[in-house]
Image (cartoon, rainbow, N blue to C red; front, side, top):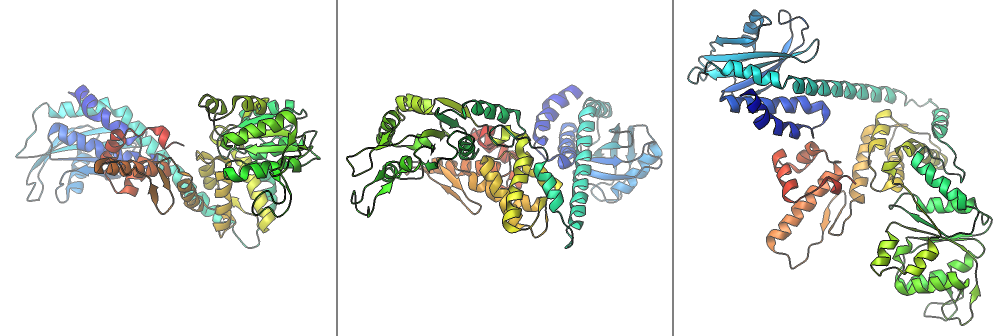
Length: 531
């Protein structure tokens, strides 16, 4: 019976509580366990008490942690007195209660030690009209003994999490005391800005072994004229890295010109790249040199080169091959010699296979390739980046601020789907929003929630802090439309709450089981919210 209880009732529920915040795990677990016990043994009520006595029940302090079912009036006092008299020996006792619904009841009692000083006490209660069988008490004890290790583990997790949370609150309170008008934090800020950083050969500070490897690779071709293709997710700092490569190259004293290929319409790209002559089209009131002319002798950076239209790709290839450009409206070519650095967040070779990017241009641009790792894979750099942003803000606004320890932990543990650019935006907003010189965790959480919402985009829906904008084909039927909306709302909530199902159910005001059912029904995987 005990084994059956563990496998058929307890084990599936154990998976549910693991998504709960650590500090609340034991409270949620106890409620779940008591409900399972009551249903399994057909009891009328179940109760769990916490005892803080290292030496039994003679002088213990106890309180009810949780209960399931209707309890009699005065139940706690009467039961505790009986348990004290019963000492350390678990077992059964009968008690009469002055309550119309429970004129008489019988309880089975089981005590389990969870730490040296803490015990939990389980009571399984039956009305006199629903008496237990003779084997119930033994089966009840065996069931709990089988899962004693799980109960102890969950209790300790919650206990330690509560201590950590209490210490965090005390630390933030102490940090608030530092926020006095006469306190100068500038020296401490300066120390933070340089701590934990190491200078690379091309002038980029990093602590991450992964990023150091990338920089060491780039440094080997930094002084050459070889073209460079930088791959990586949006916001990883590809443009910043391209500029650093230029600054540490033979072209460092020559111009550095960049263009975001995805930010211009196809009709404007050609003119921006190659220039135009006066009168070439309506509005061309004077000659304008293009990007390559302006960067002659230096470096051209083509950001998100995958967004170039096919016809412009062909003309760009000709410029690279012939080292000359032909401005719009001109029959005379202009000689140019530039080093080309390009970037892409898409797989260019995959685009080549799909026929969306010229293969010959791909090989011209990718004389050397490197991939910038996303911020979530280089957490060692997080603190150095934060300190650097704070240093820039101090120089701009003249006020020294820093993040509290708990605020820094939130920043460093966040997955940052928008990478460095999103981190920078959050640091800037939190700095400006904080009225104190120690930026508190609650300020950071507020900014991060808005930032995460702004970053959540997909082909079918976009999320802002105020609304969810969803695009659904008109040909969809009613049920399909409703399902699409439900799915979008749940994915958005999971992303905003970083997969914390407890927060999601609270935000959406739905039962936990409903959330699990929706996740399963819509086949929503962890990859969709763990960006």
